[in-house]
Length: 408
Picture 1 (tube, rainbow, N blue to C red):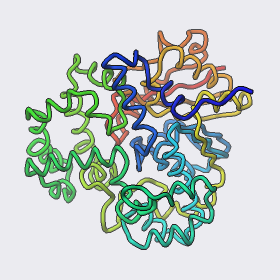
Picture 2 (picture 1 turned 90 degrees about the horizontal axis):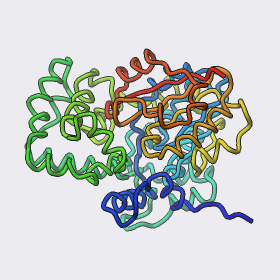
Picture 3 (picture 1 turned 90 degrees about the vertical axis):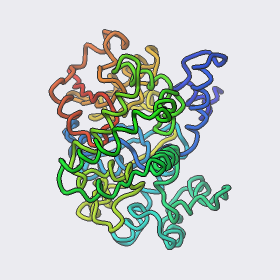
Picture 4 (picture 1 turned 180 degrees about the vertical axis):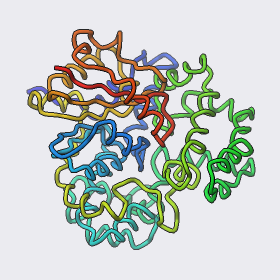
């Protein structure tokens, strides 16, 4: 009997591209170890952009990477036939299952918002025990009930869920640095015009990128592990500015805070406030909006969440069975052989007219010249849709957004 690869082996295969004894290889293995745990409590890709680019609707069978789960649940607002979400991080799988069970079992939208919107109320633990835990599988329930150095893991829901994970800790460091620089985000979060947002950025944020401390830290590959950026992807970011990551980080932070009204982008709220608007008036991911509660609740049973690689999962699916694929930025991590193996399975399982979307750390499409040409020629790149997606993406941290359509 052939044994299945362990979680560690799967994550290592996805991340490790260099010899373990090299400096780059050591960083890759540190990142892979960190990825065993929670990275994102909230996913940092814009689901509204995703659904528009995919033209997602009834009858579509979606394949995606789970990450923090917000997008998986938000796609349910488009009434797809099914969603199969995969993730190599067991913590992300357990988080997705918790969010799905919460949507299905909590009595109303207010209770859901308290648990996953505010995510910092003491009675959320009791609500978890009463409503959510009975609907979790044994492994997921044990994960959330487990005792950690900071108490039971489920107390994240009472202490600020979005303060946890690699991203939560990264933002904690960012806020420590900005407090030391006497930056107060209140004028940004209460701004009523985009001109005021831009003025705040130019006055308070942009100068930080010129400080010696920030420049020193940002130029270390490990400094961006908290954003879920492995060494290989760091290099792609830096390549957009001739190898210096500082101008790239400055421009993308500017887009995050300046290119969209602050009242419409929950990504900027997470970055500046480490949580959604405290009074509960938004903005939030679509699945947390009151208008979508009944739809998401009714459709949640259509989601399957698996602790598996995307390629391995697709290899088990019937031919021509999927219409939509969301790859996030995972391909930035992959070798040429891994990319081709993935696209062989995507092509085999793609129904006529299927659409694939993905993001890249750099601005350019990474597939030409790396994926086997006989496979890639069956797909048509969509430059206009890709540009529209990039321009509208409120998460703002990526260099490129890409759309492909299957031509058969």
